[in-house]
Image (cartoon, rainbow, N blue to C red; front, side, top):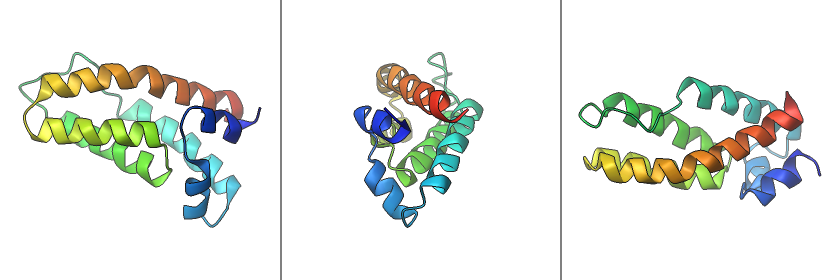
Length: 117
């Protein structure tokens, strides 16, 4: 399978992502590669400090935005929940969503790396 087929299996809405970029598959692939870098830069560890969630909220919000723009639906949905929970001072609930999301995130990142890097 190719990158787009593999990502579709993982729940990424490739058609919507390409639509947002007027069908420019080359640009979409470049942005997916950049997304991997963003995830590495803004990685959120499960051991984040519950008493100081400002930085974690900002990181989660950045990931959510890029995932949404690229139609990486599973991560967009997860990080939307994480941001909302952190803003509601429910850090432990956010941590539970993050714990479920990180393996999915890793699968998506590995898929992109396999095909692009």
